[in-house]
Image (cartoon, one colour):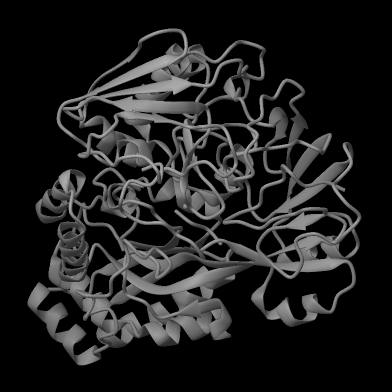
Length: 547
């Protein structure tokens, strides 16, 4: 599924605002510590497979995996794109200072630890020593500083975070100092966000690329696999990085120990879902993304093939272009929300309720510290008559409204069929335009090219990292109320204050309607039973697994 994919303290260490000790260092054992800064831990929102280890012991070193991907890759620069396919390739190449483990706890990755000054304005991040980039150059604080500065100019979450930062500078070969303008509790969590992520690259690559996506010669990371070649629209090839400096902890997710057992990963574009399934069944590929949901039962009885369900990892939505008429008018957006029957959409998009559920919250039920349905009364409030009334009050004059959707993803396309029908019944004049996914990603950046588009969002781990709330993300949501609430959140310290602010965010969302949330959803991948020790998560990861 496409996802447009934290305050947590190390559990035995203090949260910002509490000063028994200001040093946050990893002790180096798997049972040691997880960062936890007080907003939300997602404990059951990852993936599941019918079998994670088919016996035979640990994988042997060697072999090539063919990964069937369902779409062209717009860029391998994880900082520049929210596309799921980008990160599914990129996180084999690049790494972050901090990252999430398999239980969605925040852990160090390239960082060893950090310190916070008593006034909560200066963060000193200590990098692990001995790490080398794929070109053999050592990782330094200068590289980290340049990467953060670039992230702060490109990524929606980075742009927001940089508003709070006064200075980013090396304070030693492997020590980085970040000075804030005012306290900002989500700083470390935002550095670990999985969407448009802060990837650490050589300073020269960051400076040469600037705000443009990284070119092939700059696809240099510290990850277990390194970039080899890219035939656009066909295949990306990665190769084991022999100089990889692995952590020792068994954390999973995007951090902890990563072993590159495979010689190569070949990610081939196979757009036809049936062909992807056929290749998996005939061992032409060993992992396939985006398998059609209607073959789930047959996959369970297919020899040498294992279904991989990625649970509660996204929610589907209709995005409005709020930068121009007519959806700059809130009554138009409210009308659309009342026009859509979410239950009908869920059934059409996903069929079995195993793969979808109704839920109006911004966050997922598993995110116990972030999840609340209070303030979501207008989520399940289908009322065609009310929609027509609001359209009239908005002064809508039957202008044609362009809704962009891709047929690459059946859930998007099937949902659009129902949404368009219901919008038309309420009086909207809809022109549904079906595009290739990379084309849609490009077109949605143009403010005069569309009025609505359909996408889905992977989990966010802090409200300041919710990309559709950001004014620079397509849809261009400029909301003084939401901005004020997010600012309060960044300074909130008590659980009760945070809970009130989460309710306020829901209330603003359903009052201002920057988008129409449809349903929570799961997605289906498939893998060969030959893959040993494979552990599912929010998307495919091919370290710690092999043939």
